[in-house]
Amino acid sequence: MAARVRKDDIVEVIAGAHKGAQGKVLKVFRDKQRVLVEGVNMVYRHVARSRRHPQGGRIRKEAPIHLSNVQPVDPKTGKGTRVRFKVERDANGRIVSKQRLSVSGTVLSDVTRAKKTKTAGSK
Image (cartoon, rainbow, N blue to C red; front, side, top):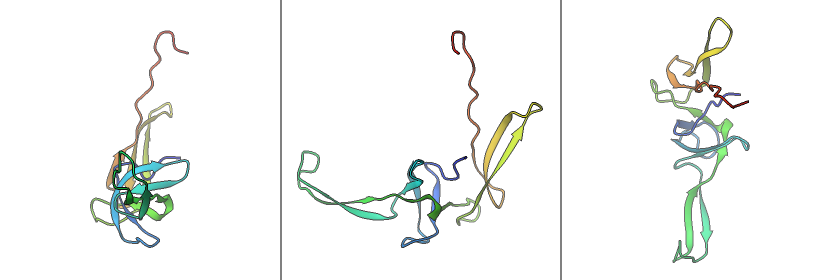
């Protein structure tokens, strides 16, 4: 299934304690269906003294939230929107282009992957 939320997207939280907050997606954990959003779901991490953290103490960092609790922000309206896909195919039925669109029709990104070309010696 195609990714409705990708890294570097601006998303809006639609459920939970941080409802209404917007932020940039830092990382997507596809296997766990979670995303790390900048400035959302901040938690404390207690760290011991080390070379990296000579003082030790508590560090604030983002914790992942479930993918179903976020929606990409429509650039036209500035609010969260559902995502649909527009697929164009050639005469043979192969996908030529695929785009992520907001419900209002604004293009969020082009999802088409680069074609794999066979080279001599490859199977």
